[in-house]
Image 1 (cartoon, rainbow, N blue to C red):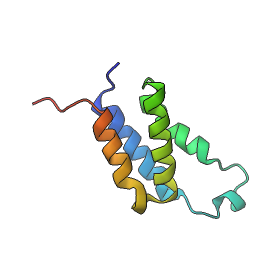
Image 2 (tube, rainbow, N blue to C red):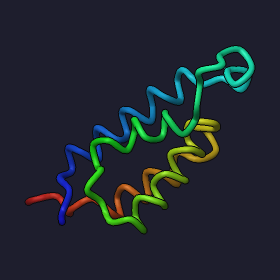
Image 3 (cartoon, rainbow, N blue to C red):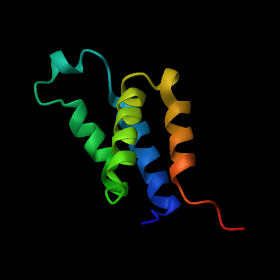
Length: 88
């Protein structure tokens, strides 16, 4: 099943938002915080993606949330790989 580019764009927006609000002490300061919940929120737009690709995305999203500067290119490359080619 091909997932539209717009849904990958939504995933990237959600990952950026999650990264913006993440800070290392959040685990100590907020008992309800869960990185897995943030990752699940980011994955919602592409929930129909194949399991293997979903696992790769979850890992990349987790890295981006906790350290966006070091890992954003990894997530972007993965999205480019998985998203459908643009229509010309």
